[in-house]
Length: 64
Image (cartoon, rainbow, N blue to C red):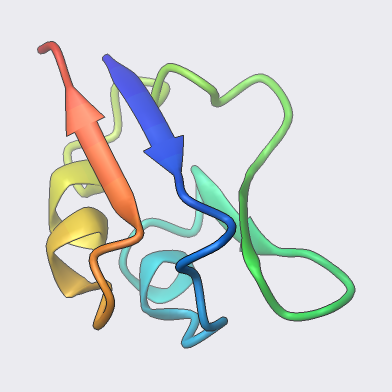
């Protein structure tokens, strides 16, 4: 699974971190980032839900 966060679009709503806290977190400025070692989603079934929950569609998920 390939997860991309468009940092230019992200507004720091934090919905991704709420939906998939084992994959996403927020940096010191409140913007979304992937947790170290979870760049491939770590098999978390909530990754796609996290992308869908982003109010500005800053997250794209491709692959299985």
